[in-house]
Amino acid sequence: MEATERLQEGEFVAAELRRFRAGAADNGQGWTRGLREAALERFLERGLPTTKEEDWKYTNVSPLARTPFRPARREESRVAAERLASLGLAWIAENRLVCINGHFAPELSFSEQVPGGVKVASLRTILSRERELGERFLAQYADYQTHPFVALNTAFMQDGVFILIPKGTVLTKPIHLVFLTTRAEHPLVSYPRNLIVLEEHSQAAIVETYGSPEQGVYLTNAVTEVVLGDDAVLDHTKLERESRNAYHFATLQVHQGRGTNFFSHLISTGGSLVRNEVNTVLAGEGAECTLHGLFIGDGTQHVDNRTRIDHVEPHCSSRELYKGILDGASQGVFNGKIYVHPRAVKTDARQTNKNLLLSKDATINTKPQLEIYNNDVKCTHGSTIGQLDAQALFYLRARGLGEEQARSLLTYAFASEIVADVKIERVRLQLENWLLARFREQGSAEARA
Image 1: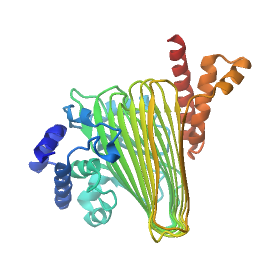
Image 2: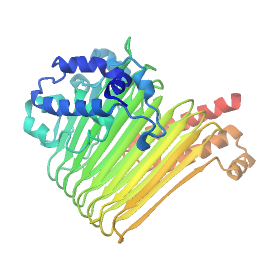
Image 3: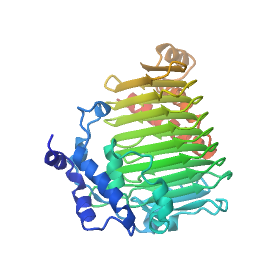
Image 4: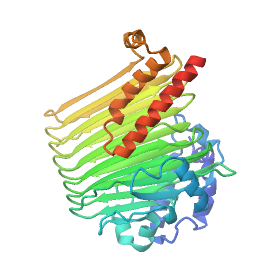
């Protein structure tokens, strides 16, 4: 495909291209110009991904090209505060950092319970005022050469959140990052960019939430880069609760040092077309990671999950469990790879994907993968696809539950393994209540049909 054809397919970036070429995209960060130009050149060179590419075989992004997105602007904070409260997001954590339409909103953010020495700021502020810090981490881990949406984000990023936790610091209170998109006359596009750095022997829990109080059409193209110094511990939870008409493409890129522990909990329930990528590189001996994910779709939702765990150094371990629940005519994708490098002796890795199809029209494409270049390892992977157990349904109904109640209870039980692992109590309780309500409502709709 010629470059001009690819540009035509990617017409939704036209407004951003004009702003970029007019010099309006730097936000005073002139030193990032070269990085942005390189990322933009790479995107224009390769274009939007197509289903002819193996990594995008089951996800068609052509609806993006047909939608006339415009760069998002920040709304008045008073209106945004009301909408934030309507999503029930205000009480997840004592420390909250909010971005509205991709722009940091200091008037909605507070971090009074963050210990002294911890640096919490808008990414725009860091890139403008602390160039050395920005250059050290920005775009050093999330690869815009191979990921087209990372390239777009790198070229057009406007703002986001920067967190630096100094050596030996332990955060006793979680930090909640909220990315809210508000409705506008035209479809919006935003490019949140986040940098999270934990220095040696530090610990933290961070929640990222993406959502909207309205059923507007918009695109969120987010990138979060995480760097863990030796012996650091991070518990990371992502809640994707976008509008049912929204598009969500996000990459979480993690770099782990020696002896680190990384826990990822991904709960994806919103959006029309969604792709979540979680990639972690175990670059230090003895590093450990756990990736847990739950994706739920109904109607015509399409939810794509792609993970990659790179075992680079010896004596590292990884555990991965992703579960999908699909109803209606929804489509799910799981594509997970464990890559064991030649020097990664004594690797211990386990990958599992389990899927529950609640209707005959729901589909799942699953591809767990192992790529191993060392013989002294212990690695397993597997995948299952099934429906609600008929015997379990019969058992529950025989004890007085209606069919709707029995189906809801079994569906919740399937999801609860992932939700129960969420360590932040407020988040876990909110998820449990939300899932119970959703499955009850879903069961009622099926009964009426």
